[in-house]
Length: 500
Ligand code: SF4
Ligand code: SF4
Image 1 (cartoon, rainbow, N blue to C red):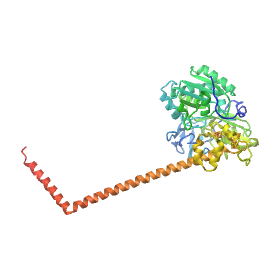
Image 2: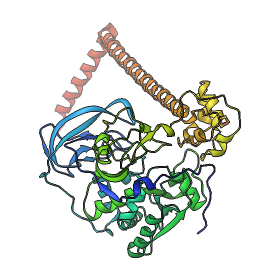
Image 3: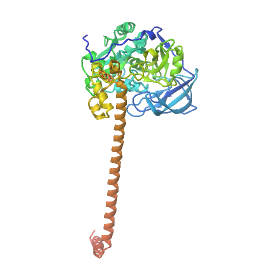
Image 4: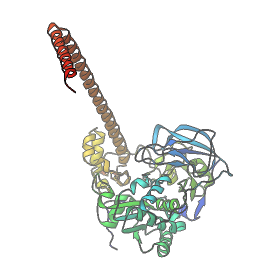
């Protein structure tokens, strides 16, 4: 099969072997699980349990709200200790409801009745929704929503390009068969005639497992495609370009060119939701970096604190300097490790001092253009930087600021060590806040205008009634009323005298 190239990107040292050597390990449930109601792209779910209530593993504890919401289920059974607000790392400063569960080993498990994988596609899609399935690659978009439109091509994304993260690699080595079966379920739902399972050429063991699984379970539908290892190839747009040569239009979505991309972990979870009736209550997380004693890939109950998971990996080493949720390129820096893991969290990375760039070493831009050469979104980062620092945010927007996928390639390429990506995050947040304020001001203006119109209409109606009463009370009005009454009486008398 002929592959294509995407613009820019970087060849980075993988650091995958550090965590994949021991295979998939199981993280036991801690005594307390703190389950966030926001583990997906849309609105936070509404808790549907109360403190003191017993819960079973797999029981729904949060009800989806809004079009892009997702249900949340109890990762383990036990008793609800509290339903309380707390921050989630992706939304600092915004309180989100968390259901705190005291885990009991003897608590029951509930599951939905299994479905046949060749059941009606709408029935299968409804199952993904009922299982609370969201994209496990990081974006967290509800899978039922993402598979609502028919597409010709399904890409199952095993191209895990960010350094250190190896959860998909570890999952494929052990569960490629369920990934392939899940790919067929997803293909049935969207009606795809082309199904490609993309795996990087550096993932030898996972690749062999995928080929064997396709041989056994692929049914002639699923094709394994080996793609070169280059960051950020795991991005939806970049992977689509590599596989098809087509670019997703600016401001558009993969569906605009007939493609849907699902992560390998999502495909496996889809299979388990259909075949076993399992809700999404756990995921594979990589715990790695020079700051962790025994790096590995763990199956983790959702709601497990980062601190507990790091302890399962042998705890911190003296080298530990910085904690990230995600990889070194796109991960979120965590101020502490008392953070519960959710559906979209694929990696806990603990970096040492050697991996950190010294603060304050930024130098002026020398207009070398290296950032533009590295940008996979074909942007001009130096220009966006200048516009956003000068407060010309609308110019930055029109130059494609929102097409920036925050991959960090420009930062790494920049010889002046300018934190471009951070600047773009700030600029986007500022624009989003400004847009939200403008939308709310416009809604207030419309409400005010509607109120004014209502008040004016009511005043006009009152005036009309008053005028009518006044007219009725004038001498001419009284005479007209007497005349009308006389006419009514005469009409009634005529009716009585008419022969029956
Ligand atoms: S962070 Fe944004 S601007 Fe920088 S290389 Fe990535 S997509 Fe381009
Ligand atoms: S890479 Fe850095 S120094 Fe070069 S043009 Fe871009 S921002 Fe300027």
